[in-house]
Length: 503
Image 1 (cartoon, rainbow, N blue to C red):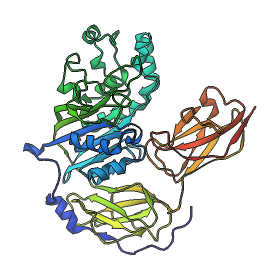
Image 2 (spheres, rainbow, N blue to C red):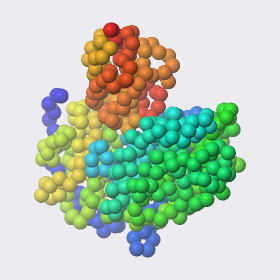
Image 3 (cartoon, rainbow, N blue to C red):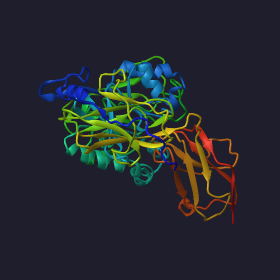
Image 4 (spheres, one colour):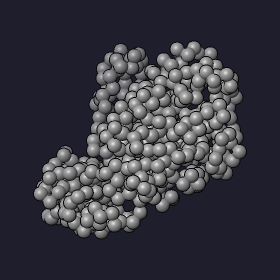
């Protein structure tokens, strides 16, 4: 790392006036308040299908607009999340976790936390997480193809339980602290509430009851399936989200249909309604959009929620900032008449700030400060919120990259034995939650034909060590390459030169 250059400014920024407005609740906006501090909130889940461009990105926007959510968890945005939010006129998005919102978003306290905090009214929050679980092997197809219930359940455990368990544990515990919780996603797994003895007698595709492990794990953690709360009878209202077609009405022979897209909730929330969003005339579709732009139908659920009192919070408008562009910092400073905001090198003390500007606002209805970055060295930074005595209250991270920087990935060697570990280093990555590195044969033209893959853990710069023994079967002698792939997609952003594996 290079040493930091000269600081842009030498003073901290005082935010007393804005903080006072926030503390008094004098800022406009926020969800519609109800008695006893409750608000009404609409939460949507929507797999938009490979960036939302398979039919029309504009139709994806129209589908969200027709559903009228306050918060939406998006799957398969393929780098288009900001385009979707901008088209809706929504100023708040969490690109890492694929969440867009009418209301301000603030990172969870820990970098590894899987949720974001939503300030639904000034000084009051809920927590929202969003996920997209592995797609294959797909359980209902296993049932269709003659697998036993034990084989199907074991496949689910092997494929998806490792991905859902961190969400179940974290969100279940968070709800116990008094923060209402929501989890959206394409789970690629049905609900155990839909595969009962009664349903098995009514639906030929349900050959036997299945206690689907993913949905059971979430229920055991205290989360509730909002669609089934609104429609308890799975025979009368199956609510299939998979599939509307590729696109509607195109379907493959012997297709399976099921409900695999969910809005889960926990804590102080009450499900008021749940609606299916899809193609006109589709089964159980409540909100129709023509043409329907995705291979999944979407779900939007309405809740009456008692949001929790917000702690001190700070957020940046994006995690990956291009040098010379401003970074906008939002904050919540409860119970204090004064506070300070500073930009520091990652992990540094607030007193060692490197940039500061006077507050100018970001055109929205929440307190914000705009920092210039032209004189800052590309690297990692933190935005830090402190009290008048300099005590740190909250921080949020971002990475500054050079204007002409491109994603890069490299290996530590050009020749490996079949059992040698491969160290891959990357920089200027997108930094999104499901960025991944795939091992391909050199020159492979089929982007789906990867040998194995590893996630980057949403890092913009870092390294992964690929333990060849962990592959189960070592790579055969030959030429290979690593490809850095865009978040939850098959879009390549960088690749290594070929490397050789020898005996």
